[in-house]
Length: 376
Image (cartoon, rainbow, N blue to C red; front, side):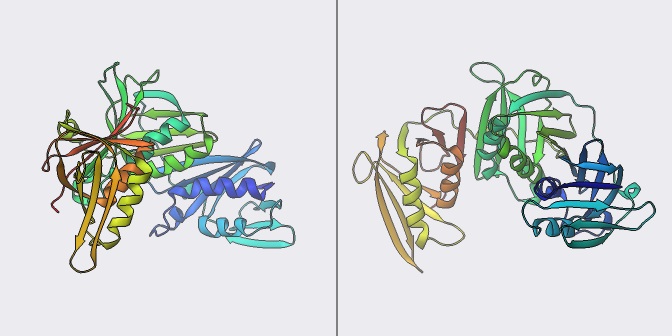
């Protein structure tokens, strides 16, 4: 096997394929990447047994073949090469090591037989459809903040992806919740998605998908989904993952249908004020008292009182309708929601101090968040 390619093409491909390679592993082959030189491309595959990525880079193939190389060493070496460098990899038949040449630099790395590299196979998809990459990224980023990290409720450790009824008909819906907060984002149902089975995409897979999709802007990405597996084709990269085997709870029961009080607030001003007052809050609780309509009808006062580190207040002008209300929220959760909604102004819909708040982007109907109150 022998091939040559640009340093930049190699590093970009390695960076994509390495996203699923475990840094700590007990099986040596799982720390390797599979390299296959064929046609006009170098194909690179990484896997952790639960997910796999295959990507490619343009290369001059002198002699086709395949091998596996330690991912960390190969990536570190490639990144340290000068810009514009040509890299040649060559391995003689039966040779246990591969030679890398770049300018005057030489490196020899041990290989593991490609026959030992685990194959990743999925089930026949039940739904296959395309979405603009930017839409898919937005759906992920606007709900990922609420993914649970609690291992005992493993079925909450991902994004629930499904078709749900909407005012204008069925909608492609992404939901995440950890029991304290919930994020929901809807998209128009694309052609081919009507048969989508309800699935739970694991947190690690969600993060990998977002990283692969962000550079593609509005380029179409293809999703093929079965009950147990998901495959994303994004540009020159194919990412496959196992899905969480579990039943997602009926999240619609915690979404407030409405409330007697509403407040429209500038998102940047609210985030800045919350960030200021939680400076003195307890590290774990981050409790902030929200006083809507106090001390004046069109104001919001934020208060934190901590006997160990002091107290803080901040007041904002808001558009408020309803009777005054004092309610407690986790300030860090509020910041997460404001960031995820990506709106200039946010609307709080409130019932009373013991009921969850519905937070939506002003002027947009595709997303919402639910935040449970806390005692202050």
